[in-house]
Length: 234
Image (tube, rainbow, N blue to C red):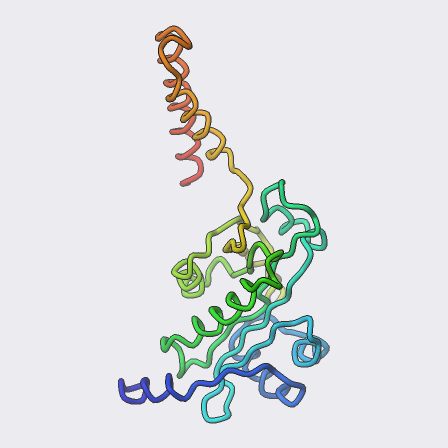
């Protein structure tokens, strides 16, 4: 698209919620965008059930992008997703799961995906949604374009999920990405615990422990941190 057309597109983009009349159009788009086949009941649900946040970006009445998300109780999450919040958050805490986010090829790189994602996050940071502590999603490990997009939007990789998807009968790996909001926090990792221990030891005064013990403990922690960082990076 030319710069002039791009500006025109941005001015004419409108947002609205999906409705049952959109099923055929949404089904066609999802078939083009995603390697996963959704059942007809899924399209019926996302276009009519109010539990879904199903938002469309339209250009001259044509749907050019959609985002579909669902707010869930922490206690209802699948095992592989259940640890996205730190342990101090109760099981009644909520999280939002992005089921789909896509934009028509000819309309990509014009901020439409960001507009849809921003609209979703804005709806989740209201006073009424203060109990929603995170937004998360699954992405194919080989979908580098999507991964870069979410990382630019401050999502963080939370876990690697081997063989998470089955696409055309073949197992495919995935990542779980998450962004925290409304005071939500991630669980502490081993490295977080070790760094905290290192900070505590560093703050100890010489009179608290013999200097030799302090040096020994500091050296031990540094070696553990170095090893953990190396393993994490690999």
